[in-house]
Length: 260
Image (tube, rainbow, N blue to C red; front, side, top):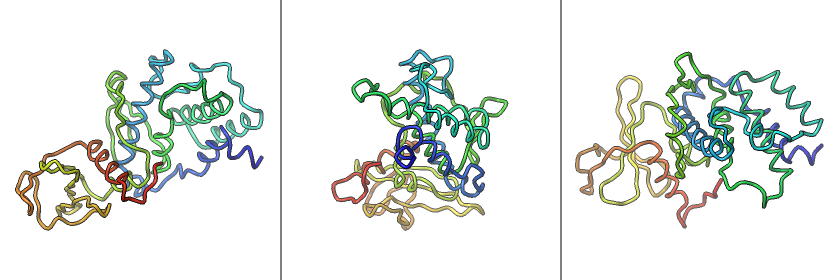
């Protein structure tokens, strides 16, 4: 069993067991921004898989093995333990995706690498999202409620792109999350840097720059759309654009962060 615990579907199942599904609301709110981006990245990957396996009608929350390999049989012990977990911990869309994650991992473990599709890991962004604050739900209007943030997912066609929305690397995700309402900006100098404005409870406003030291520094009064200390002005960007710049900075030749 020790060998199986680190192999295929068992590895994913044990990862699911370690998640704090009833996470503290404060924890979920603290990771609201990264959880939203991770959900959008899952929606993007799900669109690619749905297109590849003619599962468009099931997008976005499905067990892709029902389309990619409906004949797959789980080992009896994994089948039994997965069902026990699903009965005890999950419902609805979360249950479906957790089952899909375990079954897809087992399928890949049983399939030679040469026969595996050249698609991004489908469930990884969703698993990381679960690990950063628990589950989610879809309300009566169709919006996805991630605790602390809610949005409408749009259509599958909105997500059929090759550019990742966000990495699943913990250092990048941690750099995105902070207290307050966050807006990101970039300098018009062409240098890779990100400024963020945070509106904190009580009305306090803070401006911070993600520095070459790979942390957020107080800017000393630089304001967006105004000239800063070095003659730069700043234009607003999306959180996913900010994430890509932070990822690039962390992946530079002089950093110590490895790729996740």
